[in-house]
Image (tube, rainbow over all chains, first blue to last red; front, top):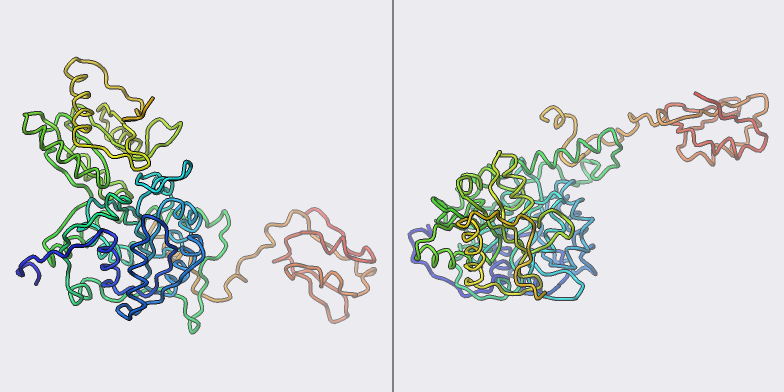
Length: 398
Length: 90
């Protein structure tokens, strides 16, 4: 097993790592439309299909709306299906995202998170996925190429489980991750086949046993069919833990629903998602070196929001800093801030939350900036000043 | 929920073909069509227009309604050339 083998890292961009994992996952159908910064993922996959390395149907569609529609149809035949998009592309497939989850299609989609127009911009933020967060999809954020590679296998196994049957979005920060080359430890094709055998769908389109998929539902049953999605997504944390355990046994790698760093006695805990977690980790490490009690919690499983996994890490903090790479204009908090505050309220905790929107349109955030943010919160705590509870916009030129 | 899942398959899949016949859409009706058989000339214009179709022809050539599926749209009543169909309260 690979645990006993010397670790050989292959240099790959996160996009290439994802495409390679999808190939090893032996998908049956890929329907995708290229959009920056996801292009490399589908470009590599089309090459794999073209040169015979991957025996799959590659459907070159005319839009993302068609891409997701084709994915839904293919998934209903019992096929293993992959697609990838970003930004405007995700927005264009918006209505079909709901069809995929409610028809219980275990499609896996890599989303190279990118800002939404206008102004037109090709760089990273989380506005795209945050606008789709109520569509009934499972959403995972990755922090590096290795996580992206590993999560693809886990995503398929989770999605296709009969207890789940939900589409899964694997979110990677556009450019920061999609175009960054790192060393990636891969599994062999035989290990991949062992971890992820061909999909065995219980119900699928087959003319020899006719069934109706996507029937009209009136007020008497629509609600119940939607409720099934809410019920199924609640089963994800337990199932993902099982999937991760199996993957860990094979590779020695496990990520969990959250990535916690130095949260044990943290007075201030910073919460974020995506590639910024690595930068924040560096800032936390530096501050810990100065004796400042700070911690980091990276949200890896975003939907369902892993409340049970987050609470133990934050319940004793004096304040939380929630960093959102998306905004929700007019809302009481930005998206991640809303989730964290709801979680705290439900747990009967009145821990102040400093909610910052940062890095829109690919604006970088440095470790020093994270330090400044955390320090400002610590200063307010020390001075006995109330923490500003309204959402703030970090680094905006005003 | 377990109970509901026994009734509805995941995603509302229907695994018995033709089972929509069990769904009696006649319950949607507010007014029902009633035919005056003395006036009916059996032209079947209503039969052509009925979107369900919930109108059938009797052995004597005149028509009758299938109230299990008639939604009460009233098209038959409008189209009848001899005004033999009236829409009446349920």
